[in-house]
Amino acid sequence: MYEKLVAINDYWANEGAERQVLDPNSRYYGGVTEPENGIAWPSHGGSPMVMALWAAALINEDSAYYHNEDMLARLELGTQYMLRSQHGDGTISPGWTNMHSPPDTAFVVVGLAQVYQLLHEHQWEPLLESAANILTFLERTIPALLTGGCHTPNHRWVLTAALASMYKLTGRTELVVRANEWLAEGLDCTEDGEWTERSNGIYNAVSDIMLYHTAELLNRPELLEPVRRNLRMMSYLVHPNGEVVTDYSGRQDYGLSFTMDSYFLVSRLMAEKDQDPLFAAIAELAAQTLKHPGGLPNNALLGYLLHPELRNLTIEPQTLPSSYRVVINGNFPREKYLNAMDSAGHNGKIYHSRLHPDFGAPIARERQGATSLTVITEASSIAALRHGEARLLAVQIGTSFEPGHVKMNQLHVEENSYRLVATETKGYYGPITAADLPETAGSEISPWYLLPHHVREITHLQQHHVEAELTESEQGWKLNIRCTEPEGMMVQVAFVFGNEGVLTGEAITPMDDIHFWKDGKARYSAGEDWIELDGGAHEHWVKALRNASVPTGCQSLVVNLMTPYDHTFDIKLSGGNPKLAKHGAALDDAEEGLIR
Image 1 (cartoon, rainbow, N blue to C red):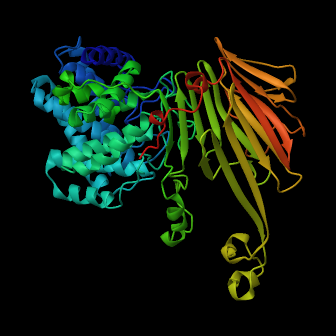
Image 2 (cartoon, rainbow, N blue to C red; image 1 turned 135 degrees about the vertical axis):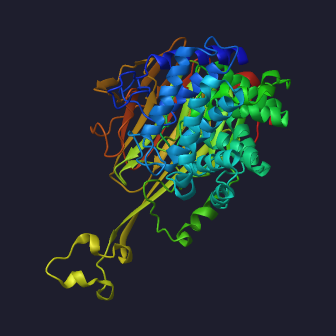
Image 3 (cartoon, helix red, strand yellow; image 1 turned 90 degrees about the vertical axis):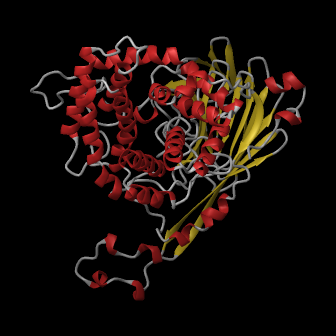
């Protein structure tokens, strides 16, 4: 694996060099432009990420660019660009997102602190100026790290890792004090290993690697426990083709394609620390898809150069699970925490972020060889199914009640079925009593936004109750959805398929980017695999309900219903239900389980 990392680092180091701005009159002089927009950013995925590639190549005798003078000059220019890009308060601004951002600065600090350590220990005189510039940049960030805040849950652990990195570099104890203030908030990871943002494609791995760095640098081994839990959970969240399950993410990786590559370094480090065959297996799977050393705080080659013991890992990886039925967060007391939200005092409001009340929502996962099923709560999709090359990316129920996609609140697991339940309420609000009216209500103008809306009495409260039951059949699954109230409401069920396959069916009517499925059967085929559905309907003509539009870049099979309804879709797979074909019944007890 080490040889592969050196080779891909050399490739990307050269690729980054071709994007470096060498015009002294440019505001980006020394920076590395982004292919998408032509701008050089000082953020962890931009110029400093490429600088880390150059540094790893320059100090590594196994690299084709070892002590290369051209790359040496490029690194020096890059460090100068970073100093010019740094604000007076020590922060950086990635212009595509956050201005004067302490957490984005912290991402860079964690990575450049590793780069500085390698350059400093290498003791090659031509590198001294670059190392000194990086040290200057890092030291300038300390005021921002000591006072700066965050937006998202994972930012806290990025900041603690940066504070710990600077403590190791400077020995300043106030950095540890600040790190402990963040850690005192407690770790947001369920017993089964789910982080707040439910982001299997991006932010799980961020929290994992940042807490690993923090644990090591501050000698806090207890911080590794949630890292272990998350890695164990992730072994059940991989599709047969190696893609990560992103069907219910609470962040920007939702529904997009990611592999396990971002978990490579942390799983490799944890395999070495714990001598754990499962972590070694995760690292091996991640290595198969690794095509880049990684973002700045998670650069795999930097990890290998700083931890040479990783090259000689002797632990034999076990086989990752490929036949299982598990429920993640099935025992998590989510209602207890949600019921305590009122006492938190924030009145359900948070600025420039989200409260993530979906944290800890149960998710069911089944896999049997090349067939992979996810049953979902608290997301815009209720289920997703992979069968070989055929990808049913989402099943969405949209209504005009809220309006928008129905998010299932409860998951009930039976021997051969899953029952999902959603209950939504929506009412009206009466006049504000005289005792609660503000002074402005009696003035010439009474702005709506100055009225205390929270004290209005709720009237005519309505309830929308939806149930969905997914039951095994000999050929695949049967999906029954039902709703008795309110009556006369438009509903739209969308089956969202990958764009690479072909949709066929006699009663399918293409309508721009969707296909109305009006009756009978429809089949989605990809390669030699197919998923066939029976149960189309077209009870109204609306193309898209408000706030319930289908994803772009996909093929969506849309069924229009009216409440009340009790409708069943028969889902058949090429080759039949692989679980029943293998066992003739439900999974063996040894293959069933609940992640604990």
